[in-house]
Image (cartoon, rainbow, N blue to C red):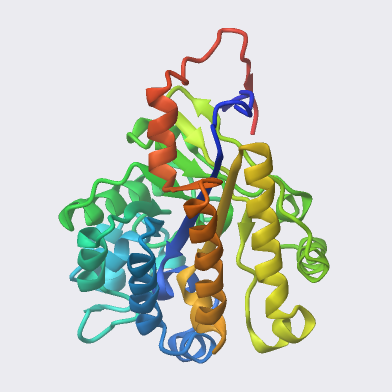
Length: 337
């Protein structure tokens, strides 16, 4: 159950820009690709993570990194690991046993520690849980999702991280009450546009491709409180994949144009532009990092002009809390998901 709450369109003195990233390595693709397929699609992916962090730190930008808990493990016994015994076997059977030295596509505790200690500080949230289990999958239920969430929290805790922000695997939202019960203050909601409400369907894919090709401006967004103290910070725009076929149909410059239009809309309306990507996407094309550097330059120019602030998801939530926003009026009525 979610509480139907108004968006707070009048709370910001200027536009707000957020960059959030799903950091998942092969965990986020274990039901889609084997290791060879993953490496062909995302070559040098571990180096891409390192370079992405370097660029953000050089630009003086704090981003929100949503981590799959398994990345933070020193290693695991795969399907036989005690931390995974309550998770659906069809899901965990694909997980490779090993450690960072033997299975670097799965375990990168050293990188998680660099993230934790980076300057400027990067916000570290949780992406799904321990294994990137899709919360709406047929094999998922409230018990398995709860175990997935708790084990993900435990993995990050062992790395010295207590996440307060969350993103759902594949943006498939469910069991919001578990986030509230486990102390999260915010999550990244799906974009408020039809193409994303249609999800991973052919009509949804076609509509997303049309939006990219047409360079449509993503709408500005505002936070919404869904439970007392739990905020939905919706995504504005996801980086459209940059594989060779998609880049022929949708030129890379269209991705930059949409970012600029989304940022300007947020500045104009004093709203939020929440830009999202998967770290692996930047390894998909030789031009991926050039594109991302141009995006960072636009964000920095807007910040330096005083037109926009660059915040993390958690920092925005803290600002709402300090402004005294968050008491749930009695008139708000619960609504079914």
